[in-house]
Image (cartoon, rainbow, N blue to C red; front, top):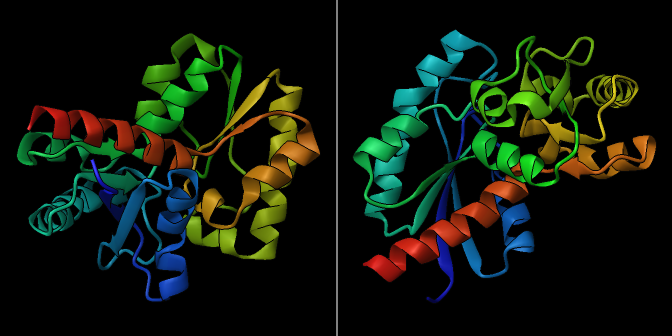
Length: 221
């Protein structure tokens, strides 16, 4: 197939083009065979950070995904670790849908190491907990980081780095970024340097899985 066309949905309302397209550019660097169109949902300036905001995001994700499918996309990526709306997309889209939570957890599982999750919620997002199961040894939420927006500030970034130390101390041999906002601000390389542990970038993982899912879909159609 020619370049795969991905529609990427951000589940935080973003007005700045640089931020809106950050995940798409990252995927295009990791998967040069892909071309990414990024959109966001409306009226959620703090993104998804609990069950209520996750539920609100689900139908909005479906609405955006249907528009992206009508524009000829080969796959849709939901760039959120809770995979909001992905189950709806699987029911209503004809093209593949990939959630960053599922993609990141599958890549972490493939490493066959004890996994620590660095997230922004007190509980681990359901897709991650379900897939990692016995491989998950610890989950840490950085102090003062309650939404993805907090990671854009220096204090939030520093708190995430400190929290990564706690995962290493808890026995993690690999760290899964539990919020795609950590990819937005490029935390992965800094965490690897600080802890000496490999880090799974869920945005990159979602791009790789979407590419192979799109290729498989194209071969069948």
